[in-house]
Structures are given as structure tokens and as C-alpha cells.
Length: 130
Image (cartoon, rainbow, N blue to C red; front, top):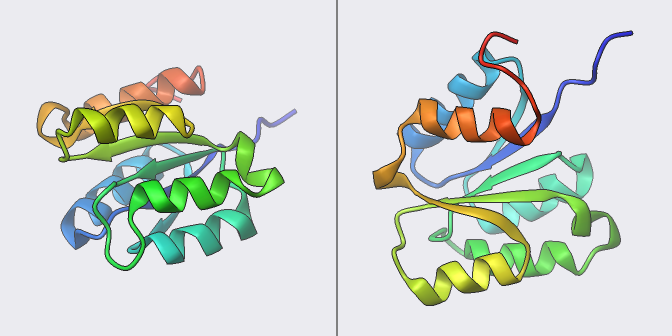
């Protein structure tokens, strides 16, 4: 009778931003994992298969787009929803992110934490008071 709690993987190299996102989504009742690099994110994603990945593009060692392309090569990685959350305002990168499987692209500077939470809640048909 209980609904499964959606699991989110937050991929962000900025410690403060990663902690704020992690706290916000945990408080909202989501399962949360975190990664600092694209390499780490790929390993976690292929072990845990989260319902959603909040993915930064500019990451050390393996960038977000490269990680996304690698993830999509794996059968189980093809169905994970990807929400790009980045400060990169490059139209080419945005188009590429959507083309390789991101369902939306949010610029960090244009969205508050609550806005991002609302966007994710919409994805899972959840309300803020869940």
C-alpha cells in the first residue's frame, strides 16, 4: 500500500550546492545519493538505478555530457530521467544534453532550490506537502 519513494542522484562538484540540493530533496521525502564527479556518478547510477539524476555539466575528470552518453550506452541506464542543472549557458551544450537524453535543462542562476524541487515534484506527480 505504501508508494515507493523516488530516488535521486545529485551530481554536483560544488560542495555547498550539492549539500543544499541533497538536504532539500531529503527533506521533501526523496531518497538521495550524491556524486562529485562524472566517473563517480556513472558508477552510482549503474549500481542504484535512480529514477532521476540532477546532473551538472561542468565536472572534474568526466564531464556531465560524457557521463550522460556513457550512461545511455547501458541498457538500464537508458531509462533514467536526467535533469541538467548547470551554469553553462552554451546553446550547443544545451541542445546536446537534450539530444542525448536530458529531459530538461535548468540554468542554476535562473532557478531557486524551491523551483528545482517543484520541477522534480512535477516530474513525479508529487505535491510540496507529500
